Image (tube, rainbow over the protein chains, first blue to last red):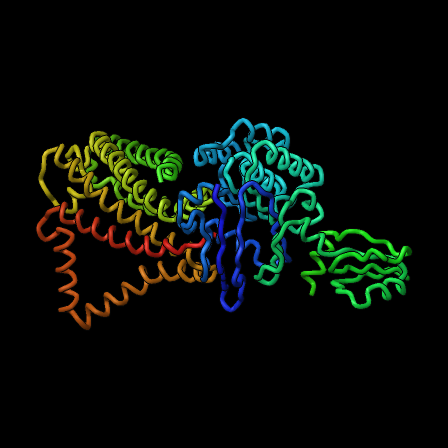
Length: 282
Length: 245
């Protein structure tokens, strides 16, 4: 299966620069975390890849062909956006049926099984569903279409903890049984940390990190302990952030951990959410 | 494109039910009036065609955006959506035109409109004296052409709506009826008073292209189809850069 190449993509909304010189490759059969703060440009990027909007500069291609207005390429993608694009009057069972008509590898039995697991009311109109159930129907379709690329923009929006856990469980199960590329854009970084393999961090329309999660987290470490000890330790080191709590301090440091470290300090690996916050706060 | 067309066609049945129900109501009403007036009713037109023209406009102006969004959710392109919509327009204008002819014929039988069995709009406007089959065929073509023009104008407005932002949509929603019902009549009356020769030329041109001068409904039908094609090309060009957000 081919990869998606994003080259020099830029997008403006009036005088606002939403995306700037985005260069990125999405490989098949991987789970990506597309992370960024509100308004960073995540949804804009997903909209461009999925032919919803047009890039002002650059190109998104697959097998050397642009994916914009390319039915063959778009048939390999499924995009769950924040906005429902289903007709208001459409019932849940019709949405499942019609999605199956558009995607030849759609697994109807699996979709119905998921609907039962999530207790999705099949005969209800989509417009009458709660925010959580609207997310559920979109996620069920995304897990059942069996396309090589699935883009999930805030997939757990409005879902309660039980449904969130069930969704992640079904996603991992689906991925292990039938691998595909899942690109998950979310704010809930802690919840997806254990799922994602690669991390793409967007800040103010630009990609600031694009690498494997393990590689990203191995670039630094955190050190905690008495404030004075921590302050002494971080001298001459690249500190990307600090937290204070009373006389205790935690520092997040880029670079390799020193072997002769002070035994009174506590060392741990970087936390993705902490790293994200530090990287996007700067 | 085929999948989009299948989906679009599947959404049309409710419109057929609505228009057949309307026709049924008109026919029953016509029959009732004929009955109570003891056969003295002399209605010349049932207005079924006008209902179909309005229906075509409403169906496509209201349905295009929704259909396009659903198709694009499922990986279709703007081009495929537009092509499918055009085919849907042709199929449904032909279907609705056929239903209209049947309705008009039944209405003619029930209410004995003007003493004739088939009183279609083209017969009334152009005054062509034809046999029953020829009259039905002529009216079928004429109804189809006007309905297609009406539907494509609806699509054009829907496409412009989809391209515009919220403020633009409000402005368009106000400007179109204001232009048609206020500005245009003022311009026409102004020109009629101040440039009568120009207006006579325009009237002459319209009489010719609509086939009224020659009394030929096929010329009128052809003009409506050419007009529909021109608006269709404009709609396609606007549709190419439509964004779904």
